[in-house]
View 1 (cartoon, rainbow, N blue to C red):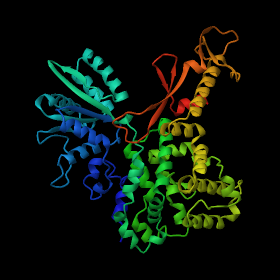
View 2: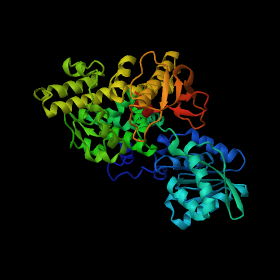
View 3: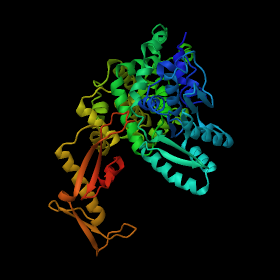
View 4: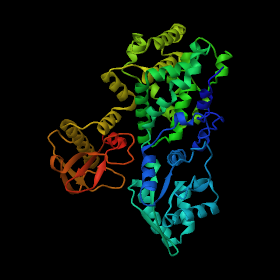
Length: 515
């Protein structure tokens, strides 16, 4: 019998070569695309900007997999492009004399890139809006090829500034006597972590799994079991995944939309097919343990890594840091008391069966015992039902106390006590950096000393100035005002010194450094 949606999920990850639906232009022809597509606020904004208002030009750039083509599809769909049925996008097209689009300039050869960029820049003057999509490198190189040296150097500085801050200000460029204006949006700078919950919601729609309810193998099918787990615990699962992805992003391992889809689809199916399960090639007692969402999320089949899963960036990065190797406050409860009351009954039965069949191998001196403990931690991280205190403890254990602070300050209004604690953290960190020792409890002044490039602390120090902790160090929690803020993150925290308008934003790495 089988479920065709399982085959579709398997085609959306790059753990092996069968990922024909990983790209948006391939997905659009699938019968399942309308079920899993996500309407983004950015797409609504660009549609209004290009179609409703005066004729404009927008370049949409970023990394491969950031979802640029999906935005184009969303806009075209709203314009009625697919009203007569699904069809592939063209390389470039003038649609209804309303919008000229270039699907992906990065895919074109050099001559076609120059022609596409030149056409894009001229359409606004003809009363037609235009949208050009390109990865950032090819975009800059193509501008370089159509401009003279002085023009390009002036434009390059402007481009790089806009790519960094997405301020939506128009950029003017002159090609010969022709002046053109365009806006550029860099999707690599947008937070895409919010899509985790929306994707899970899309993946577990009941109508997509109806055939599984009638399948004779569903009682021992790990894919169906993972669907039920995600359906039952979607809020808990999506929250921990968003936190893990945020940790990766703040440690220079940002995931694109395509990489997130690849990861989550693999965590549900493990690239197993219905035929494999029905034909009993993996149909055995511990199959639900081995291929659970908690294991597959980290690329594991039970206690062994699935080598092909390391082709998926998220799994590769997670196995560099191996969160599941960290000791948890819950270790005593799990491994000494053997208490599993934080899990559902079905999961308890799976874990207890694993314990019962491996009693002789559970000691810490035994490799199998260590691997089973790591697997149980994976279950605890992803699938446990915890109250707020225990959940916060888990986040601190796995992602660090610094991360817990950073995430809390991004989403909750800081109390006066928390503001003072952050001020103390910054003051003590800077004092140690400049003076070389920690300040006494009653010390209020930070002395700015002349330092060598090697950052050495000298016995004799030249003081250049001083900063008073209470008067000159201000901790400011700003509300994020960003039309593209789809994640609903509310705040960012920065430090201001004296009367200066310059700010030091406290990202995760800065907080970790000061601590």
